[in-house]
Length: 197
Image 1: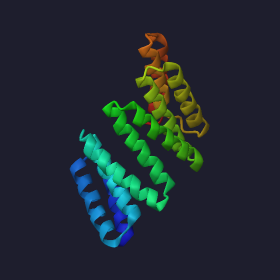
Image 2: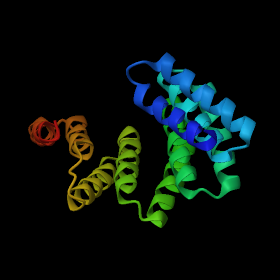
Image 3: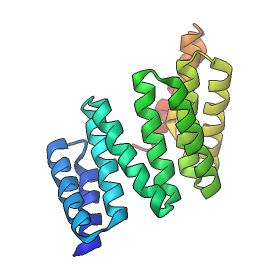
């Protein structure tokens, strides 16, 4: 009941967002309704964030941004640092898709700083990877490569090698026309994916 039901419905959103987006949206809307009725601010913030994810997936970027900003405001009133960092990362993603790299970079850097403060190494890996992608889009290849390399090294140190940074290093070489090095990195990424099935 209550917050537990809100949390469960938001988890059901995450479990269904890829396979059945409409069902997922139904779950998170129900969660939002209950959270609003019982004034469960954390549940409301999570639900708004989920709606942002759903609309981003559908390409409705302005609507997604609106939900993310609402979520962020609630997380800030709660001083929920993890929620703030995750939501800023999501906002950066929208600005990046829209081609507003200045805003995207600002939110990405703030999100990264927050994850560093929280010492959440898994999220730091994701953040470094996102910063690398941003620099890749801006054709700042050397900086992008540094972020990807750091992300890969940290994921390996954590004992959970993450293929994205390796794949993205391949993308840098590909963009530079160094196809041999690109293939080497793509093959390494493929090995990681196969190992993790």
